[in-house]
Image (cartoon, rainbow, N blue to C red; front, side):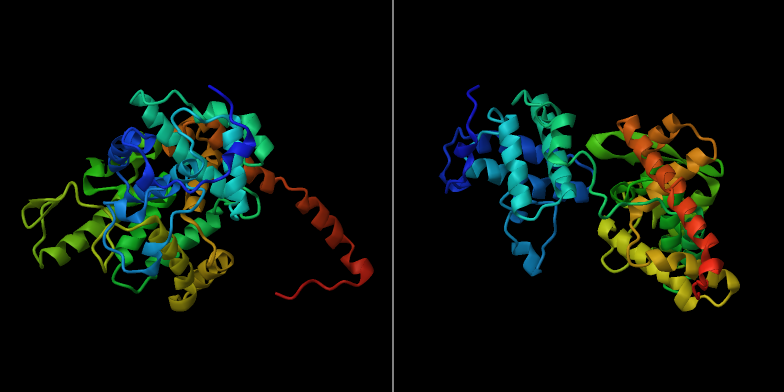
Length: 397
């Protein structure tokens, strides 16, 4: 394949309305939509579609949206739009120079390392599907390999806003705060917190769960999780987590079917195996990852607003520093770090979390270990030892 010089990658005025019937956009349209619709999570479908450059009106799984954001244009660096503007066929014309130019375009429009990683991940997943259909032989990891990612500064997420694991105290405080929630959704919120902390599932995976995702083995259960890349795994659902889910479902079933107690897995005689596990109380649609994050942020403030006991004050103090910044992924990292600290093997944690590579799991653990063994402790202790000599008072709390 002829290498195109970087100067040939300037955008043109080509649009999808002006292409031939045999243009690459026509060849990938149906396979791409089929691939997207096969994703179990609507959140994943939307994220992939947006990063590939599929307009909002073609994202048929999304309901009507009257917000102004529904008319937001496709970013100029969305993969299909970017290739189209440069008269590139993504099925054949991708080289390392092309990838460098694409990364440069994202940066020119204010994209961060995390943005580039997210877009590259979506494009890489699309190429895997196109290879399965024998439409291309391009492998993203060959073109944008580890050395190239490192050279571009995108080998890891920027440390400017890292995701740290919740501490054990913060995890316990979050559980306690959820139980102080005065809202009608209290039982649902308790179940969500228990599943996030005790299984380490991703927020998108949690939102994609159905009632049929749970199978029972006595007082415990097995959770079938559909993860990234269409991979399915099973994780243990402990008695505490299962009891929290059961309490929530019983409450929901009774509200849906009146005061009659429904059979397990049924409401008014109708099977509910395919019904989403966690619903919005307002729309009755599955919760989204963004709503999960908002929920956790709100729960962090519940103990301070509604708690009256010493335990509530303790929970409020633990959660105050993360009230506005907590992210569901911190629960996932808590699971990894705490499981290993309790003697669980790294390989088992990798399988529990559904990591494709052990390196990802080890990075979770290395981040926590680096903070635990930070030299800041020794330096701070040395500084504090000289307080009396220098007349420095202890800080007021």
